[in-house]
Amino acid sequence: MSGGLGRLPGAPAGVGGEPVASAQAARERSLALVIGPAGEDGALSLWDPAARALPLKVDFLGGRQGYRLAAERTRHERLIKALGKPQDGRDRVLDLTAGLGRDAALMAAAGFDVTLVERQPVLHGLLADGLARAADTELATRLTLLPEGEAAAMDLPAGPWHAVYLDPMFPARGKSAAVKQDLQWLQLLCAYPDAAEEAALLARARGLEARRVVVKRPRKAPPLAGLAPHHSHEGKTVRFDVYGPA
Ligand SMILES: C[S@@+](CC[C@H](N)C(=O)[O-])C[C@H]1O[C@@H](n2cnc3c(N)ncnc32)[C@H](O)[C@@H]1O
Image 1 (tube, protein in one colour):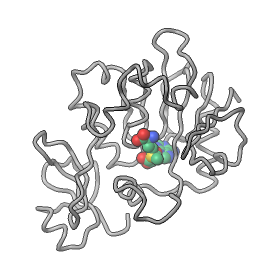
Image 2 (image 1 turned 45 degrees about the horizontal axis):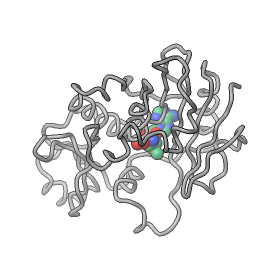
Image 3 (image 1 turned 90 degrees about the vertical axis):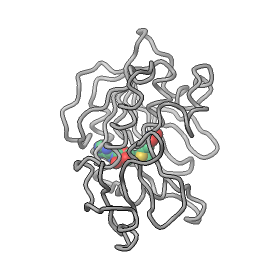
Image 4 (image 1 turned 30 degrees about the horizontal axis):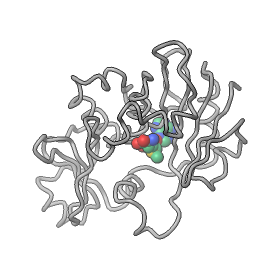
C-alpha cells in the first residue's frame, strides 16, 4: 500500500505491515496507517496516526452498523430484497468479498448463515477479531470466516448456496473529501480489480452451486465484468445486480 502500514505491539503478525513501537513512531516515519489494539475493549483497529479520526474496527455488537441490524428492519434493505426469501429454513450465503463484514452482518441478521471470504490480510485480521469479540452472540453463530484467501482460486465449501454475494472495490466518484474516512482507508489497502480479475471473480461465483449471484455496484457503474444481469434492485447510490445460475 502507498504510504505504508505500521503494525503496533499486540497486532497479529499475519496482518502484515512493518513493526512499530507506537503510533507516534509511525507518525514520525510518515506511515499512512497503523493497526493495533485500541479503545476500552482492546479491539484490533486501524487508524491514521496523523489524524484525529476514530479508529476503525469490525463491530458486530452494535456501533456504527447497529441500526441496520435490527431483524425487522433488514427486510427493507435492498440487499435482502435482492437475495430473495430463504427457502430451506437456515439458508446459506457465500460472501466472497467480505471487507469489513457489514453486508455479511446484515445478511446474518436477516436469517442467513453467511460464510465470509477475504483476501486482504488487514481486513481479514479485523474480521477475525470482530468475530472473536462477538463470539457469544446469536449473530456470530451465523457468520463463518474462512482462512484468508483469493476467492477466484481457493477451495470453497460445497454448495448448495442460496446466493453468492460480491461487492468488489469500485473507484469512488466525486471529491475525495466526500468519500467516507473508512472507505479512504480501505482504498489504501485494497487494489481495484482489473477487467481480468473482475471476470475471474464473477465466473467463480457463477460456477458455484447457487440459486443466484448478487453483485453490489455503484448505481451508475457498468455491470461487473460487463455482463448484463438478469435484473437489478436500484437504490439512490447503489444497485444490486442479480444473476441466475450460469
Ligand atoms: C468493497 S469491499 C467489501 C465491503 C463489504 N461488502 C462490507 O460490507 O464491509 C471489497 C472487499 O473484497 C475483497 N476482495 C475483493 N476481491 C476479492 C477476491 N477475489 N477474493 C477475496 N477477497 C476479495 C477486498 O480485499 C475488500 O476487502
